[in-house]
Image 1 (cartoon, rainbow, N blue to C red):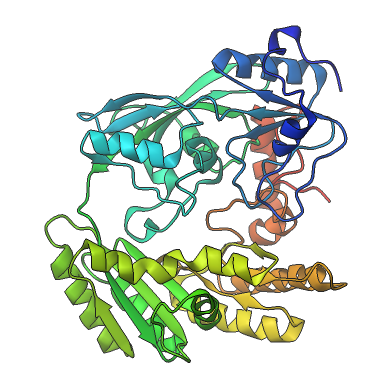
Image 2: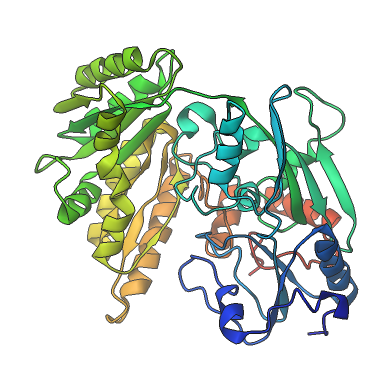
Length: 453
């Protein structure tokens, strides 16, 4: 690849070991190529310089933040510049009157929440990786999280963006105002674009009034159908829960193997439900408990205070460590209509038996967005391949059920082969044409999302 401009010399990572850490994200099989560069931008001018160089030389650009992605969208590619923007990490403004915050893409999600809280406000998008994922990465994948059932996803809270396009042009999309319908929604176009159109360098986010500390209900079920009926009933509540998580039998077994979190033996499913409605949390969780009991819950526990609420969440918080303790795995992300969750989970169980692959099916039940986990043994020939084939089977089922290949992790490189199956050839061609309008030379994260083979 062409030599980077000398003006970027202080931004280029030269230490091989440090450089290697910027070559990969958290996706399965991520590996550094032989030839690539890493630029750690410190300001807008650095991003502009890289994008100008890339356009002039035809060099691919891989935009990158905290490298916590699971779909392979932030992995270095041969001959590319990895443009890391996590150092653009300043919360520039929190405006309580307008209910907005202006932040750099490198701001950690939890830090933006804290800045909002200091003004008595709340930034709702709440990925499980909130403690280390960045707002720029959240924008890139339209991240969701634990509280989407009430609050929605990242796109619902992004009013405007500053973006650097290939060639170095800086544009602004959207607005700061509460309302605005002038022109097309280019902000919405960039949210979820996974670095294929440009590089986000500033985010204007909507904030809402702060909720109350949440209270929790934990319910266990002897069969999936009753758990699914409970989810549907809770979704139809006038005051919808702020959190509605589902754990299937395989997930519960994995969690109980780490420690006894009180789940009964033979439990087919568990639901964790919360309310954070100001002034009504205790009232809400009692009502949710009644709904769960009416749907056929075997056991229901209701928190009376914050300490009990945390205790009832302990099993859910133990999920990731429990799955990690089981061995090598990859975590995926599919979403189906809420009424078809049981079918998806049953299909996952059938696929696990057919492919001889252990699969856990848990996630955001209130959204129909599960994160199936596929286990494999790298020491056993064909084990990983069977796990990947099992995921392909589950993707097909999700699409047949009217769902999508990704609810919040993004398409990246790992799911791009299935995008045409979901969109169809005509829609895929239209989306590629839109990408070409912003990126005519095709240098922005090529090969990600819009797979061409």
